[in-house]
Amino acid sequence: MTLRAQARRSVEAAWRQATTSGALPPMPDGTVADVTIERPANPEHGDFATNLALRLARPLRMPPGAIAAALADAIATGPGEPVLKATVAGPGFVNLALTDAAVEAFLDTIRSEPAAWGRAAVPGSGRRVNVEFVSANPTGPLTVGNARGAFVGDLLCRVLEAGGQQVTREYYFNDSGAQVQKLGASIIALARGREVPEDGYHGDYVEVLAAELPAAFGAGAPAEASEPDDEAAAWAAGRWASERIRAGIEASLEALGVHFDVWKTEGSLHAEGWVERAVERLRAGGHLYEQDGALWFRSTAFGDDKDRVVIRSNGEPTYFASDIGYVTEKLSRGFDHLIYIWGADHHGTVARVQNAAQAMGYDRAAVEILLTGWVSFVRDGVEISMSKRAGTFVTLDELLAEIGPDAARWFFASRGANVNIDFDIELAKKQSNENPVYYVQYAHARIASILRRAAEAGLVAAPSLRDALGGAPELGLARIVARLPEVVEDAVGAQETQAITTYATELATAFHAFYRDAKVVDATDPGRSAARLALVDATRITLANALGLLGISAPESM
RNA sequence: GCGCCUGUAGCUCAGUGGAUAGAGCGUCGGCCUCCGGAGCCGAAGGUCGCAGGUUCGAAUCCUGUCGGGCGCGCCA
Image (cartoon, rainbow, N blue to C red; front, side):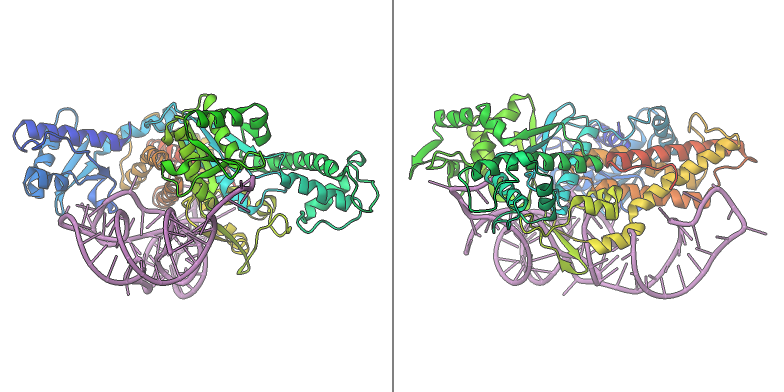
């Protein structure tokens, strides 16, 4: 249990006690308000604060100051060993200060179970969740435009895992669409020495693929006018190329530390009948109708602004039809929850997918679609347009070669997923040495160095911190170290990572200040060294776990 | 026109109704005889786009408005 949760319990108990004793009147309607506990911005206000008195003032028809006084009094006279010192402040806040002993006792759990430290026991633990992200079609290498989805998705998965959820990372792609044929046609054209078609693919990678195209795919055929079998050849070459590209994409993602558990093709959904069965299910429920020769889903019945075509008038199912089939396929695998991470440009398709899920009888809330904001990539102040077909893009591999995966991860982790951001590549390169991620990693490496020094000097960390942290430098750092589980808990709830990067930076700052004020390795005072070594080791574990949660390395030296 | 996202320091961005709105970078000024200077300390820099409203309390919630982005296909 987090210290915050303990504080909440104390306040709840104090409220009950004050009500029972008559110090506070009962709630008029018999309800119980949620007790909110926050970390005050100003450390002089203690470790926690609650606004309960302010919120009870109206229903209890008492001045908030008087309610706060009653609550503080009840906390002071509560049973058991005192953990919190309560004071009334401002317009009616109750400020709560942890006793030093409570902080010391709490920190002992870090070094006894380092792997568990920071994992949050929150609602949703044990849930089986499918997270589908990136899902770029393999018609070209991943671009920096795909980077955000890759990092945001993987970071989300890591956060959910820290919350005890069972996560499957899934990549969905189309290996049989018209774009694949276009890719094949472009390659064959180049292989035969012709120009790439106007609407074909033009990147350097297309030339590379053309040069490697085996002769069996028609590379050596005459350069003259199109033969009847060109279409088939383009398909075959396209499939060959897209599988090579897909393998390259997988390698790029692995280089980022992003591993997908499932690679799913749109074609397989059709081949296995998922799309057909899902359409039948909608039809049976009366959610479909025919018009202009096409089959429509009555999406407006669920609040959409227009109905959506499922089967085109030419008999071909739409991409939306595949989406519907995919929902049923995913849920058939036993997931409790589906998360999709899409670019902001797909927001118009969110409602129809959720509507279809609802129409098929699923819990609408089980299909969660998160949208990432737009990333404008800029080089030297000029925006880079991203087009695979035009061949004007920066690949993810190139970006990583320039700024490195740790800095890139930090960049995306420290920003909200749904905000638009500007990414100046030259600036990122220039600033990479000043990147906050190195500041945090440096703190970790510095501690590792201290621990090595201590070992050389024959100093050993204290087994327990109880009654060991004497001074202000120690207790200041210890209080920040103790917050990790709360930060993770909030991150899981919000499905966001910014708070983790903010916290890691704050912890590193606190450590650097501690390092300045407190000598850790001091052979003349082994007792004090032992206590400080234990604290510093707990700090190291906390930094490593925070970074690890983000998929960022925690180096022993740098 | 309609819908969604967004507007916070010179720049890039945090800030899930609370107390004096923060960080990094940039700028300016300091700090090692000492466990890693990729560090530490300090300064300047803000009408939280604007206007109303709700609330004891609003950067945060609501309405309107202005600016930016993205959508509004029998494309994917």
